[in-house]
Image (cartoon, rainbow, N blue to C red; front, side, top):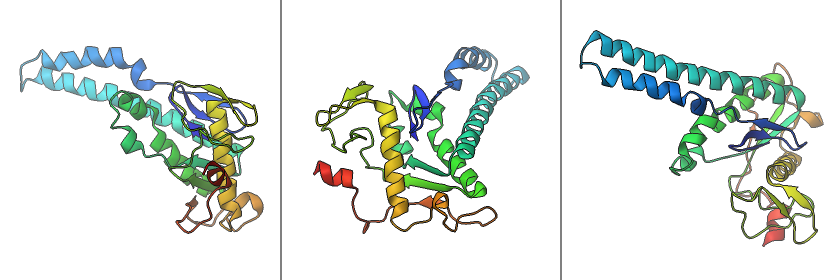
Length: 222
């Protein structure tokens, strides 16, 4: 599964789930209510009441985001045996002031967390691919890696095999293949009859270690 801002999640089978952008939808209401306390006298009861209204408005946005992420994660866990995602450095992405607000509103970190514990409860395998895995730049058909892939490019053609790719779907397929490669290296895989099963509490997070053999796609790009 690949995550983004236009589409919150894109799976390897081509399914795309829109990003509701809860904060943007509530922005007008938040601005109006945030002006109320600033116009009241400091220490007054009316100022305190205005601050409570602002807090409730933010709480509604948070609850709406959590509700959507829980429903989406439940659907993904129910429909799959192995779930592979990227180990995104969300805190680092928040330093980009142009995308910080949209990144925070999307809730990528929370989505990964709820997927992880729900997969564990359901006896499914959960895999996190390496942070530097070139999921967007690699061709899911032949494995060749492009030198650069700016964010404004949403579809591209592989120069080696000529395959036409949707950026997000291609990234999701690469993440799927990398996750299966990690599982095939001897790590737990519920879908392949491993020890992960309902009622057994085990850590579902699977991480690649430094001594692990490099991905064939990374080797092809060297």
